[in-house]
Length: 170
Image (tube, rainbow, N blue to C red; front, side):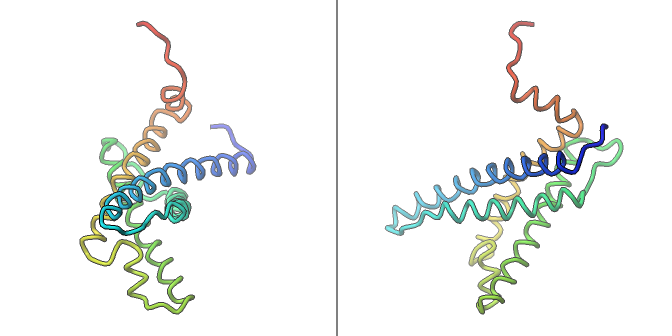
């Protein structure tokens, strides 16, 4: 593998961060839109797309940190699906822990009770928290799957298959 300059590596990581942030924002915005449509029927005004964008950027930052730490790398002879699931679970745990720590720190800075910070992570009930974590798991699976496929196939091959026009005919 050819060595890349620090500038090239920084540009690559910035591009990856931006793509991941947009992906997460689209996912979070879809959830916000669903919540809005349900609450609107009950007469509740709710549409924080800006918060979805901020949450996407913060989550992307945490996920990029998890990638740098190389959480749960593949093992020789392991099925790709097992690697994807293990990496997804590792990133999910990291995301929940770091998000919780961030909310606790913000609560301490602003003088709010710690328990309200924990509620801000997933919801005010255990069921809401479990649902939020499950949705995040479902959001992470395609992300981790595409990264893992890129590692196995080569990112240039995966990019060519996904983005470039395919030749017609056999």
